[in-house]
Image 1: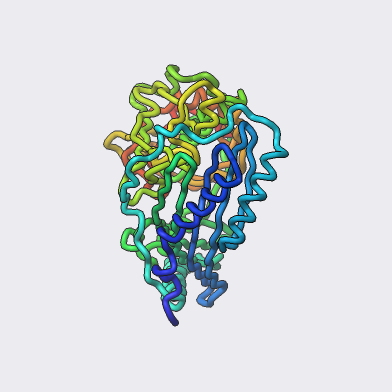
Image 2 (image 1 turned 90 degrees about the vertical axis):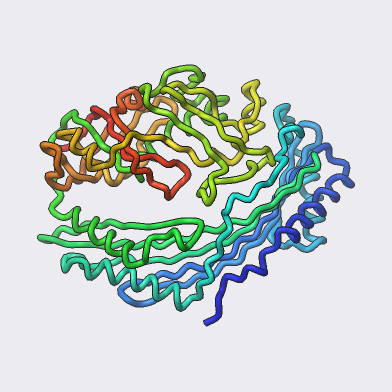
Length: 448
């Protein structure tokens, strides 16, 4: 079978020319400002279940979005047809919509002097020349390794191999036009195990910009098998207050709630539990949160944000103190501030840890709960109240004692952030927030 993801079909120059065409058309129609985003994404996803192909999907999506500003009125339009005629029609529609929308004095492009001056190469583009047959074979290999790990692994929800390559071009009437390509690849496996009539489910996955950085397919399946077997025999707990250790892939979400609360939208809407918190000590002294948007191969690396503003390194939290918000140009204007080049979100947040890993923190905590999965969405971004269903392992005498399920961990995030006792150096690199195992010295663990 031929290779499906073809690099030559993705053209930065071609998409930049479409952006320029749309901007020229907008200028001819007399708009005050305009911005255009053009993109193309191509990918292949193969899923196998119980040794057979369950699904095979090929994507090839292309589109262009136009935003125009007439004074303080804004209009948007988009099209998946990128012919000159379709682009001109979309620009005309955006202009028509701008005549109908309400005025918003904060609307408009980011300031011209903030535009990215150097669209640097961040090593984000590593195509995986994999065909459908090979992707299917890898998925089967991964699942097979998990099913063979232990006879109690009784079923599977499948293993998936995915690859994607995309190009993004952005331009605006300040004269900025830029583009870059990026890839993402992943392998995942979801398994079920059964013991004494009780079934458990768990998974493992790997993701990276470059296929060479992925864990082996066999290892993904085997680790999924180890994790699901580790859940068998899970018990319930009596309600107690005790230390809680979040494993790295969970701790990044715990930190992420703080980032959501300091986002510009939450601040200007007055809907944040960290309202007006710049300068406040939110965490213990040893906690820092660093934004590093230019990390090579970073999963959240970008040379410029979604408004064309050049990204830059900054320290959001140092010595536990919040130093700044996460702002787009719009939210910055609403707050009387300057954009932090975060239109589209934060980029590569790093939470440095001490020279400890999960095992050493488990030993340090003595007794408590290791959280390996969270269930539900019980987080109130306005009050900071936190209540999530949890699955994990109970620790006694500094060692894993038995698996736990059907418990709830709860507290208020402002208090919980102050209660962080340690952060490990075992960072999870599979997302936009890199944080190690995180130990909270005490939470309410609600059980039976």
